[in-house]
Amino acid sequence: MKKLTILLAALILFNLGTDAQFKANTVKAKIDSVKIDPSLLGQYQLILNKSKTLNGYKLINPNRLSQFFQSVKDTLRTERKELSLANQKIAGLQKGVSGLKSEMAGTETSLAATNAKMDEISFLGVSFSKSNYNITVWTIILILALLLTLVFFRSAKNVNEAKYRTGLYNEVSQEYQAYKTKANEKEKKLARELQDERNRLEELKGNR
Image (cartoon, rainbow, N blue to C red):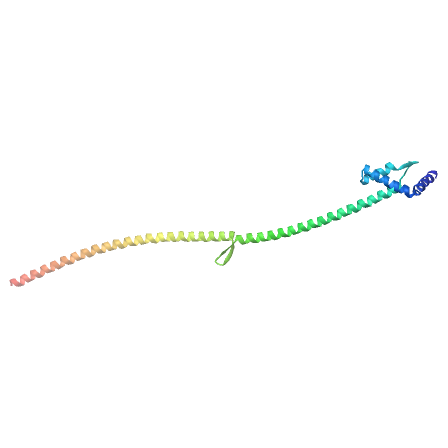
């Protein structure tokens, strides 16, 4: 109880300070703030260093406590302002990132359309992809090659057949020519014999 009475008396003495003392303390606090760390931690340490201890209790000057509280409010206000500016910058950056994402999506879509257009080939009014076009072309080439090979073999067979038939024709023709020659010779021989017989007959008739 005695300690509590002493503490209340000390607080009353601090609160009954005159305006001159308040101004003097304010000027002294400003001078001290120049010499010490102006951060909240420095101000808190200043309050502890400047406070008096009475029966194990710290007697804190209300003016310094008010200045510390004002510094805390100013610091919070500054931090909130910086936080608001930082949030605005983040929002602006996010908006820029969203714009870049949209632009990249448009670019990727345009690139995909360009690649699809480059990969597309029109043949006889029909659109093909390059892979399908290559498959179709090579299929046609293989079919034509097979047909050409088939035609070649059939042509070779026909040529051989034609040569064989030409040989047979030539052989028959030669035989026919030989037969015709022999027939002419035989006809001529028979004609001569017939003429001889006629002449002989005429001679016999004349001798009579």
